[in-house]
Image (tube, rainbow, N blue to C red; front, side, top):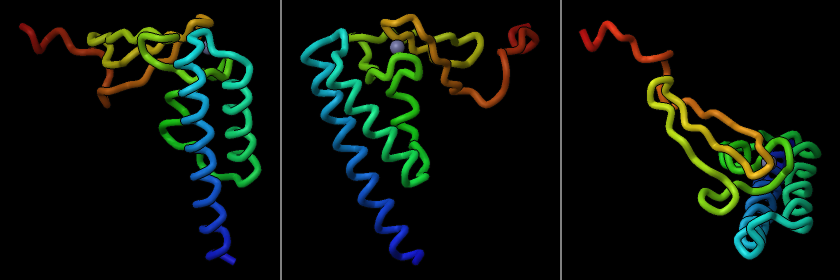
Length: 114
Ligand SMILES: [Zn+2]
């Protein structure tokens, strides 16, 4: 049974990856992100919830949680580095902003500069 589950997860991961690449291609063609690319992302999310597999880092970082479009820097997403706080900010065209920490601890301490 565990072998079958592992095989199913492999197949599902391959399908998710191909759906995301199709959505990425479609978003590059139409920068606003059309319904078809959102449909591809929705199908990938359905596969994730059906097989109860982890979404994966790429899926979590590259897809807007609000409008389900694939985020491509410079096309429909702006990337800003907040070095004082240690995170990278990804802002989608819909206005939703996501912060990804790149430093494990909090804001840079001023006492280090003294
Ligand atoms: Zn969005």
